[in-house]
Image (cartoon, rainbow over all chains, first blue to last red; front, side):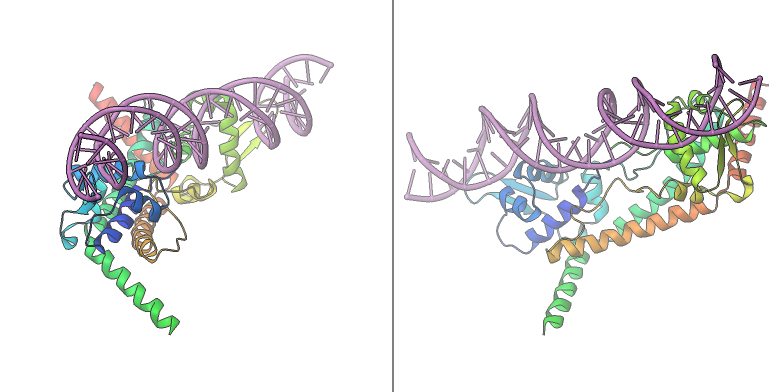
Length: 147
Length: 147
DNA sequence: TTTCATGTAACTTTATTTATTACGTTATTG
DNA sequence: CAATAACGTAATAAATAAAGTTACATGAAA
């Protein structure tokens, strides 16, 4: 399975946008994320539907953050992306006739549900501001190391 | 990506095998799992490498469980299958140059690592015997409901 | 020696994400 | 008001990974 990397992508994009005073174009974002501007538009479009960013066409248009960094959580972003499937492992059949398979599904589903709940709680506890701070910290450390 | 359903599959297979005194053939297992005997051999072969089952060729051959049901955990099975990727969500680039992206990765990786640890702990706490009991319970309930 | 079963390599199909192409729409600027 | 810069989006292709299939070899039992 190819893994869905859109959450990672939009976080990267949003942090870059947060460091700019002007809107950033899909082309700029695509360049820094090493992808295609159309992909950027598609993905950012979902964030726009959730009210997290806005876009403007024409000269000096582009994408802009429409929310306070401290108020946007990773979970909100995950939801804005349509809550994509979290696990690459799953049941063979979703609604099997076989009672044995039903039991297997029940036990696995419970385990996956717990792990997903933990992940989403974790996502809910991290804001864009936290990520920005993480970056600032990382940046300082690199500078120190370089002298 | 297509989701990996082998853990679900082998659990289903093992529980059916556990209810038989004789070895079950790949064809029989394939039939009850609605798949192909070659797929069964491939998957069960991994369990054999882990010492959990044995296979015999020729007349009255097939697959047999080689372990106590109470001593085999879901985690062992997951490991026997090669510890496949758990998440369908992941980082865009694994080792990015961009410091922003490194920060994003670090935070996401930590969240995923926690959730994976929880899942694997959960897997480690469930044995085949537990699953078998779950099935027995479910079977009883169905019978009661039917009168 | 025939039959039944696994072992395995090679290839195809299927599902899903990501990338690309093409063209339309809107806003700014000269 | 024309040229340009930007997004919007549909349609299609490429890339990736799991699962399925075919084909044939190997080994054991009747």
